[in-house]
Each structure stands twice: as C-alpha cells, then as structure tokens.
Image 1 (cartoon, rainbow, N blue to C red):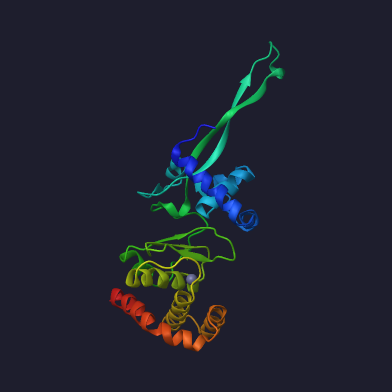
Image 2: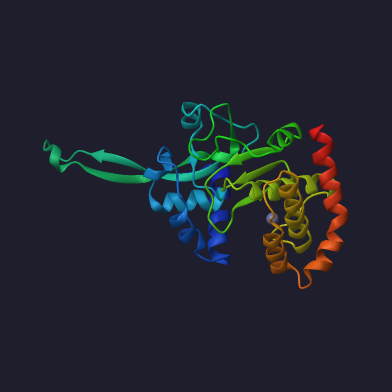
Amino acid sequence: MKLSDKARASISRVVEKFKTSSLSAVTKIARIRLSASAPSNAWSFSNKVLAFMQAEELDCRGFRQWQEAGRKVSKGSKAVYIIRPLLYKGKTGNDKEDAKAVCLGFSAIPVFAASSTEGDTPLPEYTPVELPPLSDVAKRLGIQVSYVPVTEDRLGDCRPDGSAIRLGSHDTRVFFHELTHAIHARIGGELKGGQHQDQETIAEFTTAVLMDLYGMGDTTGNAWKYISQYADDPLLAITRALGMVEKVLAVLTSEKE
Ligand SMILES: [Zn+2]
C-alpha cells in the first residue's frame, strides 16, 4: 500500500484505537442520521468507519466537494483519510466480457470533516434556520460553531482550547453548554479531556442560568440530574463551581453590550 506519511500516521492511529477500545464506532455510525446530500452516504462501510474514527464525524468530503457545496476547508484543518482500491481492467483476449478488474493496490484519499469547513452556505439540514441567542457573541469571540451530525449520546463537544464547538442538536441548551466549555477554556486554560466533574458542573449550571436569563424555561431540574451523574454531592459541586460560572457569565454579558 502506497500512502503518504500523513495518511499512514492517521490510519495507524485508527488501528491503535481499534486495538485499545471497542468497536463502538461501528454501532455509532449506524445511528448517525446523515444529510442525503452527503457523499459519504455512498461510501463503503469500512471507509465510513475509517473516517469516523479519525474525525468523529461522518460528513467528510474532499476539498473540491466542499467547494461545490459552497464552503471551503478552513486553514490549518487536518485531513482524514479514506481508502480507494486502484482497479485495473485487464484485457484477456478480444472478448470484453472477459475483462476483469484487478486490484493493484490502494490509494488514500484526503477528506475533511464538516466542522473543518467554513463558508456562507450553511451545511444543509444541520444548521438551524434561526441561530440560538449568543451566537453573535461566539462569533465575536472567534469561537467557531458548526452543526454537524454526531451520535445521540454525544450532543456536542468543544475543542480543549475553546476555539471551536460542534453541535449535533438544535437544542439551545446544548449550545449554551458547549459555549460555556469554550469560554471556560479561554479563562482557565485548556480543558481536561473527557467528562470532568468540575467542567461539567460549570457548563451545566451556567446553561441553567442562561436559559433562565433568556426566558427559555427552567432547566434546573435537568441540570441537577446531569450534575448528579458526575458529583456525589451536587450542591457542593455547584458551590465550588460558582466562581468560574460567574466569570463565564461576565464574559458573555460584557460581550453582549
Ligand atoms: Zn460537557
């Protein structure tokens, strides 16, 4: 297999993931609802797995395919790789029916995840018609917000440095939660990987405050349930989190004015 070093490194990371974790990517892919316009609908299942394990997103497209969709790949974005067999139709005699495709090897094709693109044309079917409150603030702070199809158990996520968030839901609560993570990262330094108790408490508590602030309903019940998953004593966890909650709210409200 002839692959570039980058592609090789990317694919060996996938293999490593397979070795050390489970096959959960396979079951996740089955549950993601892709836009009908996404080219990856037509990919082989193994290429879907390959792309998803690298990007944690399924709507990955080539550089030109994104251009055709009215978007461009953001500067500095990393490609993920899928594999295409190099087929050669050999001729055996004059009978065309005899022509059999021979696989000569594989080539790696770089594709880019939806969240690695930008442009005035929204991602079809993913971006809501009406953006949630504070979207303008996120933009001013340089936090890239993208709506992409993700699995149901992961409604959104935030890059550890707070530079970008991905949303798989149109629920404003999900946006507020990830936005809080992003601002938290900017105030307190990089976020810790995975679901960390302090971070989740801060994000969920701030979300409850913002939902109330924007008259979008009382979500304290939800927040309590969520925080209880991470903290033995939710009240203590909230008390500890309040300092950062206040700082995050200060950033959001000062930017608003
Ligand atoms: Zn979170």
